[in-house]
Length: 346
Image (cartoon, rainbow, N blue to C red; front, side, top):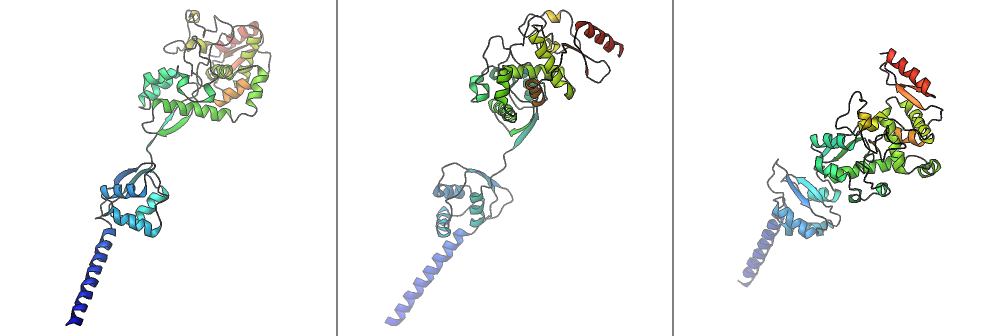
């Protein structure tokens, strides 16, 4: 009898152990599969215990305790990455571990926008607000708050009452891709960072600025004038040279684009009355450069302003033959002749 009792007890222990093993194994099995993914965010600093509990709450595993034990057995979990993940119910422990270890997060939704060369702050604000990228009023407000941005690029930008927008000319014209729902501040920061990056591609920029006795702000101002005056690339450096020639001769620049900048809407042809608008930006009334850029210049215009083409030209007029090129002159008499030629070509 005694021997039979021992056998019965052993059988009970074996069955109990087997049942426990079966139960433990069942906890490691995937939950019921589903084609609808579950999105969960693993926050930075989350430990494996917290992640396991989160996976159970989200219905991706049966037991956080079993997952923790599995991680310990497999010596995994120390390199899990934070981020937003999408997982379908029915994935195995190993699939979950692989996803979290590789950082296979949900791709962030991006939006793309383009700022054409020569756009002003107001044109950017209108375009980007219409496209749902920025808040128009906030964009315009921040354009006069350079201290809101942590960038070496704008630390030297003057904060002058005469400036219409302090950051005019500092938002680089380019096609951008940013995270959806990026703040207006982040969008503007990205655009200024792009200008900073582009300027770094110019060899010996600081030395060349010093050689021409120019500040970066003045360089961008000249470049913006070139951008708004020139269509044909080959003329950029030549027009930049004319601008410097007139400044060196103590002549007014008399650039239409500076007057257009003051108007709510650009005109196809400026009237004589427009040229009398009282403003430090009006180069028909004031000598020298305007207080700041009148648009966002391209890299080509910045390079032209930095390295202008030497000439004796003091005047230019747009050809009326559809080429968008200019006729250049050394004297006012030649300039008047060029104006007559241009009109005759209409």
